[in-house]
Amino acid sequence: MRILTGIQPSGTPHLGNYFGAMRQVCDLQAKGESFLFIADYHALTVNPDPEALRRNIVNLALDFIACGVDLDRTLFFRQSAIPQVCELSWILSTYTPMGLLERAHSYKDKLARGFDANAGLFTYPVLMAADILLYRSNLVPVGKDQKQHLEITRDIAIKFNNRFGDVLTIPEGYIPDNVAVVPGTDGQKMSKSYDNIIPIFGSEKEIKGKVMSIVTDCKGLAEPKDPDSCNVFKIYSLVAEPEEVEQMRRNYLGGNYGYGHAKKALFEKLWTKFEGMRARRAELAADIPAVESKLAEHAERAREEAEKTLAVVRAAVGLR
Ligand code: TYM
Image (cartoon, rainbow, N blue to C red; front, top):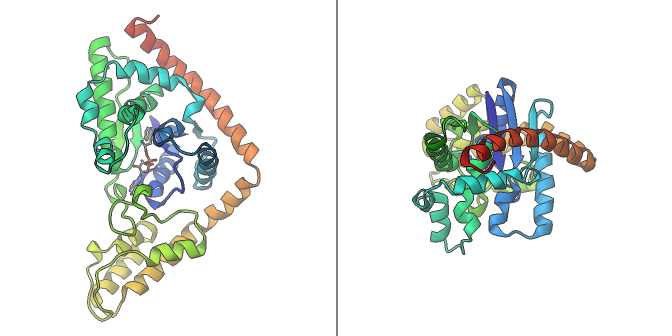
C-alpha cells in the first residue's frame, strides 16, 4: 500500500495540520510505503514573498521530521524538486472538465472572500491530482477540507482510465472522523486564513495566549457545562488520554468547573505533548544542510517513481 500526503509551506503549522495530516502520516508510515511532500508549487498560488516562502519550506521540513516522520520509511521531498508533476498536471488538465473545477469549494470560497484569483488557483485541484497520481498512491490522509479535492482526483483518474485503460491508480482518502475538522480558537475550522490557529511549535507564552483565547459560552463557574459543544473540550480530546477525557467530561457535567480550569488543563497537555518534538526540532535546526541533503536524496528516489508513471501516461495519450 502506498500512502501519500502534502502540506503547503504557508506559515506556522497548527494543530489542524498536525491531527488532520501530519500525525496520520507518522502513524501510517509503518503500514506501507509512504510519500510526503512540501507543496511549494501550490503555495505559489497566493504569490508569497520569495524569502518568506524559502523560510517556510525549511521550517516545515524541520516541523515534519520533529513530529515523527521517519526518514528511513517515508520519502520526504519538496514538490518542486520533481517538476514532472507539472507535466502530468498539464496532461490531466486536458482531460478535466471545466465544470469540475468551477464547483470546487475552496476556489469558490476564495472568490467569495474577494480573493483576486489567478489561473493557478483555479487549476490547483489538477496539480493536486497530479501529486497523488504521479506516485500511484493508494491512500491519502487529509483533513475534511481536502475531501472534495480527493474526489476531483478520483474523477479525473477514472475519466482518464475510461479512455486509456488501467493507467492510473485510483486513490482513496483517509479522513478519520475525530480529526476531520479540528476547530480553531473561534470555533470555525482551524486555518491560517481565519487567524484562529494554535501553533504546534509556538513559545509557551504564545500557546498559552491562544488557548486562553478559545471562545466558549458564558456559563458561570458553578453551572454544569456541555462538553460536546465546547471547543476547549474538543481539542483536549485530541491530546489527552481517554481516561483524562472522561474525567474532564465529568467535570463539565458536574459544575463548579470553569472554562479557565479546562483551558489550563488543555494548555498543560499541549505543552507536554509537544515537548519532545520541540527538543528534536531544536536539534534539527542546528544542522539545516543535513536536512536539505536528505530531502534532495529522497527527491531523487521520488523522481524515479514519477518517471515510471509519466512514461505510461505519455505513451497512453500519444506523446511517445
Ligand atoms: P494544507 O496545507 O491547507 O493543509 C495540510 C493538511 O492539514 C489538513 N488540515 C486540517 N485537518 C483538520 N482540521 C483542520 N482544521 C485542518 N486544517 C488543515 C488539511 O486537510 C491537509 O490535509 N492542497 C493541500 C496540500 C496538497 C495535498 C496534495 C494534500 C497538495 N497536494 C496531495 C494531499 C495530497 C493543502 O492545501 O493542505
